[in-house]
Image 1 (cartoon, rainbow, N blue to C red):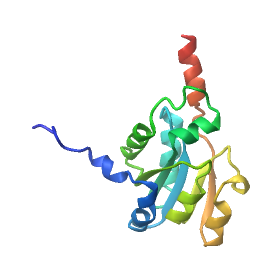
Image 2 (image 1 turned 90 degrees about the vertical axis):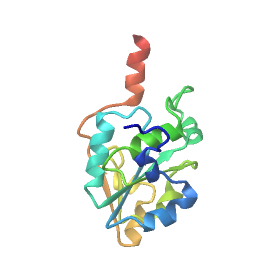
Image 3 (image 1 turned 60 degrees about the vertical axis):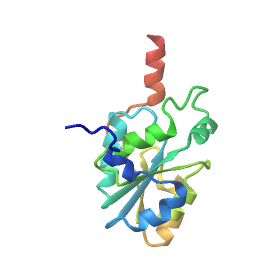
Image 4 (image 1 turned 180 degrees about the vertical axis):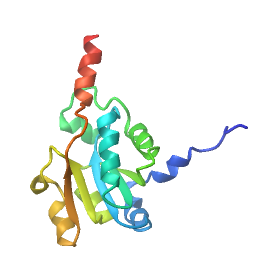
Length: 164
């Protein structure tokens, strides 16, 4: 049996920012939203994403665009993986319902478009510093800071690789 010419099923879970409002409205149950770079996906990322997904029924992940990552100052060679590649890897995860990107410095527009009931960030983000937390709470949702279970860092991994 050949799959030549077929598109991977996970690609249907990827959408543009312009499609986000409609696509999010079609997701079942409680919508959970998180965002990040997710450059070199590691155990810390997948554990965090699985925990975030357990806060509701459908997890939306918004990735920083390549230009947005450059502005974060993570290094001249970052991101390692392109925005489309990062989105595809995330979309292939069972716990992720929808993946989009944002080009701005914050995901606020994506949060407003998707109107999640739950906003999730990693433990390094207290609720009071989360972009979009006020808005989500104002429309009756909640914001959650998930403590890291597996401390990993893409920046640290890249440092190790470069040192040989």
